[in-house]
Image 1 (tube, helix red, strand yellow):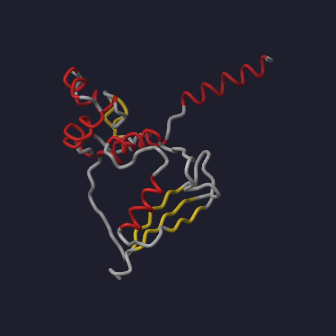
Image 2: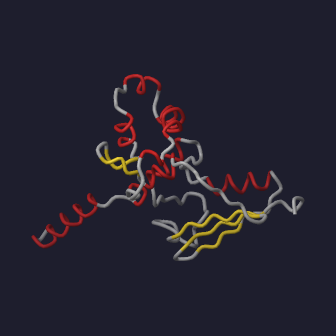
Image 3: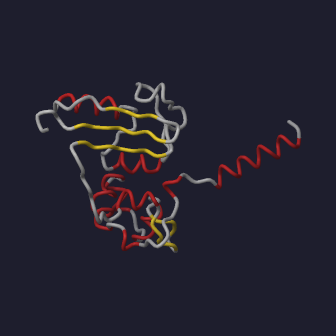
Length: 182
């Protein structure tokens, strides 16, 4: 390998090492008061770690939050995107119309394309830390089964088949109300 190629490889490794996924970015003007610490302590931690591990843990709350990536560091309690999305306090919720739309900005990611979206066996995670946290809470299972499970549950409750709009800049899932509700 030439010196130039070796230098380029080292530079790329350093760049990758310094990169962090979006879900670990700090959210300025947030702190511990924006996080639901009871949810973290009494719901998240017992689901994420065994009882034996928690009993042996002598870390402070800030150390636990930093170790689970909910805040940036022990000495910087700025909440991360992961922290706000996982244990952040929810202030407002809106529901409009007789359908739910889930919009994922940025389009499909990694190995997922518009052609293979929703097909069994294709999986990739833009925000792996958020996926881990949502798996801990039981909201996702991380086996590329979300869409098939959603389709099965919607059919079982007499909802129409979900519709997907896939673009290079977004992915949207549209879930309609049952016709008997309308």
